[in-house]
Length: 330
Image (cartoon, rainbow, N blue to C red; front, side, top):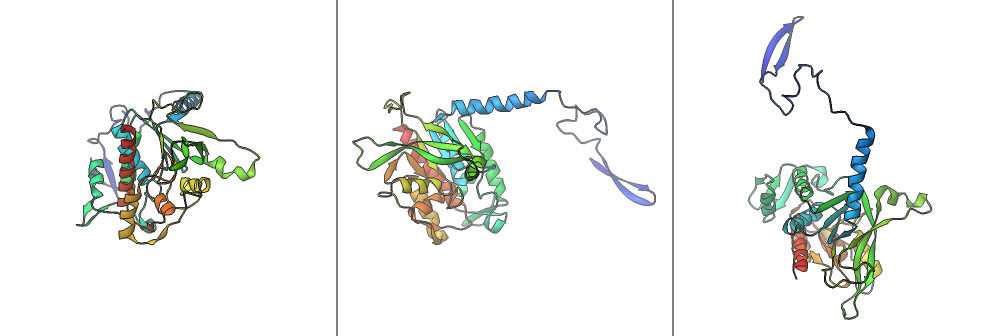
């Protein structure tokens, strides 16, 4: 590509010479003004059927899942990457109430762009091949969206992952624990889901019933199949909000004797990031088969807020993912 300067009506005009410019459509488009370019012809119904058939096949095939991840923020996506990559035989479903995955990780603090990650969480960036500036004790990704788009792409490229966005978890499916389980009263066995816009409009209609995704480990009659590992839910819905900390609030309501929703404490970055990583994993007390990672932990366990640093988000997802892998390896 080169620039040439011409004079038109006493004014200088720069013209781009594209003779040496090649791109993916260079051999398709032969005219300068692209007048010979056309898309292949298909009907509108073809588009509709292509979308509909694939979506509802996914709904059918993943009505039972080994791992259900609630929330596709940075911690949930990090966990999904660890689990699905290590165990391609496991069915992993990710449910996100928003249209876009990533949670608050598209930007940094106060809507700034640069993403600060304290070491050693930069090792995960290395694995994902996300570039950064090394500042010694911490690294800086030039834009948080670079991490989020990369991890999203990596996760969605894994064949055993299904991502349902604009879908909300409205409730948990629960069953009584076995009589010999003296530590818990309930086992989470699935999630109750609905379109997010339907959930938001419940007060305007008389009844808009939901659907269900069930965890693996049960017979067709609903009894426990002990030849199979019981599936798990990993809740990563973030701090309290319209859809935030949902599973934490729900199990606290279901089992108030053993689970307390303590609410997040004030900001203390150095304390919080370590605490969030260390508390990530299976829920201790009252309800089985549910795991937590990310800032939802801060709400249920009363941990400090961390502020606009992201290392603990990645690493808590990795730790929870490791625990879930150990669960299925037993």
